[in-house]
Amino acid sequence: QVQLVESGGGLVQSGGSLRLSCVASGIIFGIYDMAWYRQAPGTQRELVAGITSGGRTNYADSVKGRFTISRDNAKNTVALQMNSLKLEDTAVYYCNARRGTMWSALRGYWGQGTQVTVSS
Image (cartoon, rainbow, N blue to C red; front, side, top):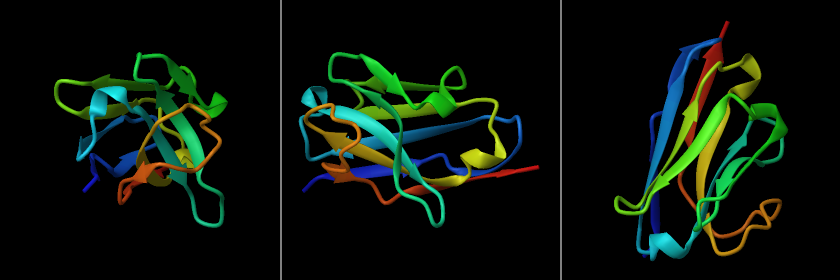
């Protein structure tokens, strides 16, 4: 059974930082491409950042230079470091595992989501 368990969400002031973590089980982590998506109320789920099994990264334009995705294959973990947070970063953030990097496609395995709220 595949499980993706996110942690690290919460409430933070604008300009602050948060670090999200996702621990995966039930998959051969090292061969999966991993990503973080987010969904705000009334909007479509969108890619925030992705990292391939080989370590190549891809970011949404809105987070480039502020967010960093990383993975630790020894710990089956993918992390998202979020700096200089803005009000518009408020959303539920989802961890995703998939084979293949067509990031626009909402497929693969999903975590339960963690809420990130940025206040002014």
